View 1: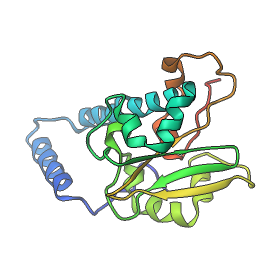
View 2 (view 1 turned 180 degrees about the horizontal axis):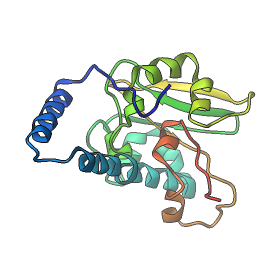
View 3 (view 1 turned 90 degrees about the vertical axis):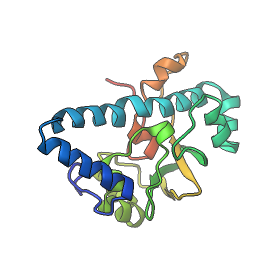
View 4 (view 1 turned 90 degrees about the horizontal axis):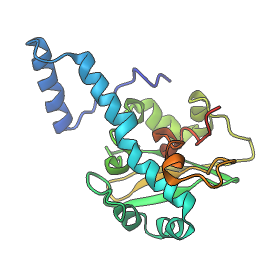
Length: 201
């Protein structure tokens, strides 16, 4: 499965209009597609996911907040002012030594923009949407994440009514770290479940 080149041909009307506008502006020489790609990548992988990373870091640092996040993720996340597009109905699922969580959306364009930024192309691609349900362990291995055979993988299907945020396990050796420093360890992919949080070597 290619994570860079699989595209979802089922564009919603808004996405179709954006694609058409981009095509026209490019043909007229008014925008540079490469520059647009850089901007999109920035929001997709850097700016957007920082909100979710701060939520995770706070849950790692504050047991009371972690408990609130488990009970009512929507309100707990909103308390940090992260609300808005498709972030109205949230559930946080916590990775443990026994269970790893993976999020997919099989039927709709359901993605918590307010905490994860723009959805990656592979998340919307049919191969990921189908195989994550059928063969989650194999999909994770393609992302470079090999889990112990005894660890259970639980797949959560986002819907229009409910969207998920994976809270990865806190890496060892981070006791005493500030929330800001901890947040740097949390990637967008870790909050979808296709990666884990790690301390850089």
